[in-house]
Image 1 (cartoon, helix red, strand yellow):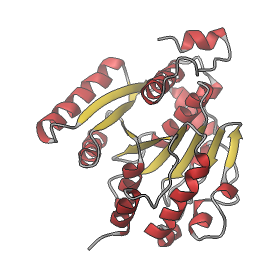
Image 2 (cartoon, helix red, strand yellow):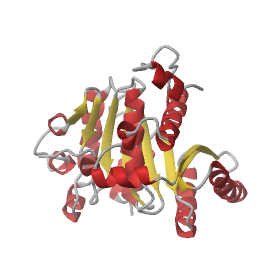
Image 3 (tube, helix red, strand yellow):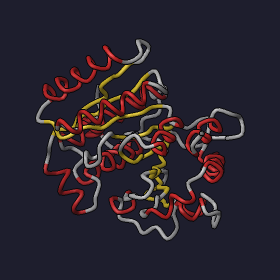
Image 4 (cartoon, one colour):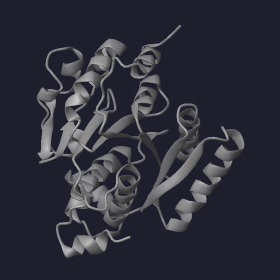
Length: 286
């Protein structure tokens, strides 16, 4: 018997859904909660915005949404109201800064009753108004739930976030396995590592297991890493973006490097990156 997510997946593959054709959908996901996925989604979105791109963040962690908390905004209406057909998607958009907006999610299990294929299909059709945005960053829930997989199906690129803990690494591989059944490529971001060497070591182990057990057509690539830094924890407590609070820190530079890789992969950005100062030029140099 087909689930709601299965039905929406079929709907996504038809011409009934008019999703933005010029917008790159990027899903930030994880096999396990508590690995920094949402913090990374918010800061990565802001880094892309600072590179001169128009960015929309979407809190798709249905039932556990908290991007509005991180971004210190008060969402009067959210995706729940859209799914209940109480308002349009445009009405819930929150402008964080010009060309950097949030589509707020909803905390609480009651949203599950409205997250069906009809409501979500209507949601995707309403996204067409974002066609002049460059990136649509989807902060998914953690784990391999069908509703998480639904957002993975919709994404052009998927970034799996994990940390150097056995349980997180195991769950990250489980997520990679699911993705390999849907896509030919996935990216991995190692968070809270002590060094680049540790990040590469962990990634190599996961990649080797994937290579030996998954489709030969599937590729897993590392897109970057973030070192363990008190700046990240402190910024979460203060409810600020660390790339905005301290743009010249090591972790901010690492986020900007990841943003550059995404931008280069998605667009010809040779004439598009808008730098605010020579300092940014140094920070973002290849």
